[in-house]
Length: 479
Image (cartoon, rainbow, N blue to C red):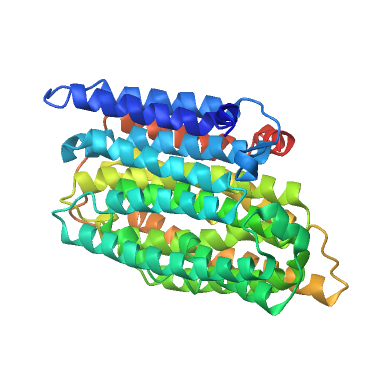
């Protein structure tokens, strides 16, 4: 073994160091009641990790090609690390109340470590190990409120679904190994032929990863898990976990199954159209806000994967990374506000609880409105620009005069029409806060400093990331 290969895994090494520091700090101060420094420590370490991920590095591999990194992977790691920082920042009040602050932070960092390994995999076995490294601690985090029935039920459904999807994925990988006798991405890509074994392997592999991203028809677990999990974990599930899985799927489709693009493009078009449409229709019917956001996240997953319909890797990965960045700040703004309201409203998260919310909490209402506008793609907020770039990436290389190109443009038309539907249900929340009459609205809340800081970061991102074109240009140039 060449031990110098470990120096090529700096982002992962920094996460391991963070885990050790947090473990030691938690162990030493376990019996102390006042640990105001613990959350700032965790947040500062996550900022350091984000900076480490942004350090310029060339494409390289380690351990015989099992670990592969590139500028595109490093950019996505930095984006997910930034999102994790926001999660840790806004979760302080809830984590302290749970009296298991250290365990919560370590679970989150462990999950991020697994996602990093998954995105940097150059081998199907390494990819699967990274996926399980992310899934197991995530299941523990979902069950964090172990004395709440809903939390335990959500974790059970997540574990059952994760186990089933992993089995389906391994079944697909076994087909690929039977066809080519190797687990290495580069070797499979070199030998790729559209034979029955490969097609079956592609279908089962895509199905397994489709569960992780919550693409229709693999989405059934999402609403129940999102509703039952602690709100902070729900936010983490909806953005960080989804972003890592979507990036990994895009990378494997392009780099491993690139020789079968006509096969998985058709499959992807069908799944995207179903995902966006069905999720929007179910979102309209929801009265519970976390279930509402679950179907919103399913719809957003469909929009994210529009980037896979293009034929240019750089454009597709840049637009997907930018979309995930915008989605993180918008969605985390929503879940931060949901968490604040939930903690001050006896754990209730019904949409009707927000009736007349602006009368007592005008600032939170305004920030929630901005986030909803961004998720819906209303200009000039960042969400509109993120949708624009994935639409452009989707039609990259498509000739509308050909049958194949016409289908791609048709899928984008369906996605565009669905943005109108999404505006309807996102504006339901705005209507509840500003228009629906309520004689007894929620009382005025005072947020702690961490929550205010997290909302300030998210709101700044919503307002500025779209208007400042240099953000997308920086991502595209870095890749």
